[in-house]
Image (cartoon, rainbow, N blue to C red; front, side, top):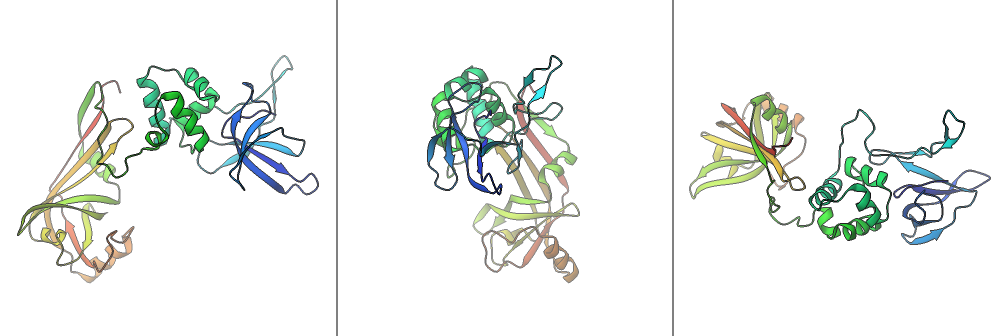
Length: 309
């Protein structure tokens, strides 16, 4: 039996095969992944030292959230010897798709000039699991985060993206940043079909910029509001609408700016079409049945990335 951090230990009834207990392996005592293991049990959340018996087996976590497969059987090489199949990072031919925690870990590790092997040794985990964490959308346990934070000289809150209520962009700029202009087609792709953007309008009290839930329908930007609200001031004038994304872990991001006239949607069929296509109701709640549509006359965008990319 061999395991890695993050694998699941399952104990089953020898007669019925029903799962009696399961838990996540959060600590290894041998580099080759053989027992015993520190297991965090799912029913009590307690961590205990476990020497698995014949009624226990390992379930490796796949490269993706929420899925799993049974431990792969040993394979035989040409010489007839058995070798274990260990889970790695990104499978060959598949681009990395890290989660936010993995990107923060990789960024901090790189900033300190540490290799994966050294970081894994400090955190008492297998380098293969660290590769998986940095390259796939993993969901590590508290014990794993504590070990990584200690190895990197940071905190679990920082690895989780602490500072939720702080404005974005507090991190350091890239050493060699590059600012790129985006093609309108790429801008439309980044805006997707819906999301949260900001509309800039002129009001009786001066300029104002407010966030709204928007929909993209037939190349137009549409949002729902109330007649006496600030966003409703967009009707009958040329406005600016902006969408952006900031990647705190990588100090990168993009922004898209749409400029065009805004008008109220009054045709019943058009309103019904917008309601049917809406992905969400306005987050502020309340009575917001007035639809405003912006017809783009200019779409521009920019992206900040590393010059090395």
